[in-house]
Length: 199
Image (cartoon, rainbow, N blue to C red; front, top):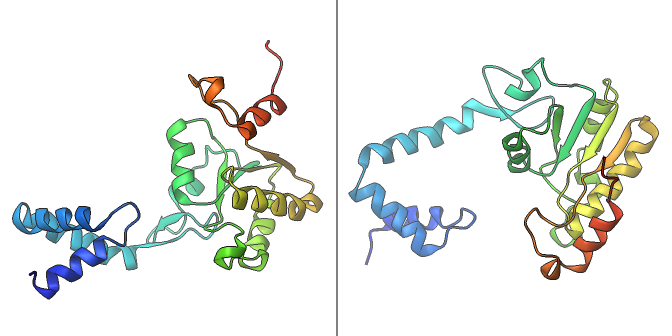
């Protein structure tokens, strides 16, 4: 019922995470019938991504090709002694929104996952060790609290031990405003292990 070009656009949109066929069709129909200028601007922005955005050579986040370093690595007000290791750039953005992290970052872009074929050799361990050797005193392993995230954190902690840097893991526990009766066993266990004195 739809022209091939339209079907192709819907199929491409549906490959995005969290976008199903119906949402993809809604996006494409809006661009065609509602806002052709938006469609052109979106197409141009996507074309530019390939040439204007590159991995930051220091942290592996995204950087403008013209600038070299990403905005965080280029910020001299950041504490270079604290390095937060995250799985994805989206995780880095979450920390930045919180305003709590004033150190620097290192993005893995993947986690250990035998089911997905990601082995220790696939992680950028040598780049991380070189980064830590550049004056880092604390490495915060901020991988997600999943099986793959925990396995990655344990592996990295072992690899980082000889560096002499203090290796820490994010605390996890009961979310603010959460009910204890609905918390799972692992969350409650972590909350008890990570308890601290009230001052």
